[in-house]
Image (cartoon, rainbow, N blue to C red):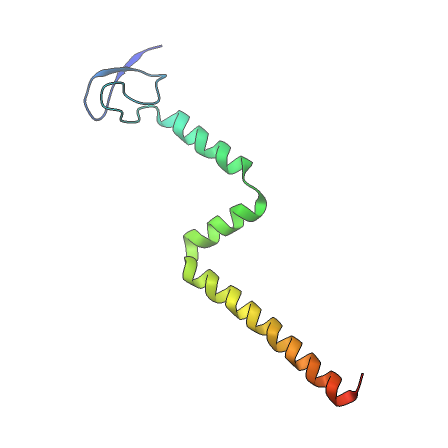
Length: 89
């Protein structure tokens, strides 16, 4: 265990501490990034896909895509009902 300086208040802090006991500033970046990696590992494949889409495209794009899929499914159902009525199947 060694002492390092807090980047915010410049007090001595253990290198194994996650936060400075004086000001609360995060000092151990490696443990924070390790925690983030563990969260990513525990996320399901679908959650990872949606998080990437949200980051790259935003919610509006995703909502527009879902709306388009819904409208295409609705059009398909209406078309099938019309064909059933025409051909009497």
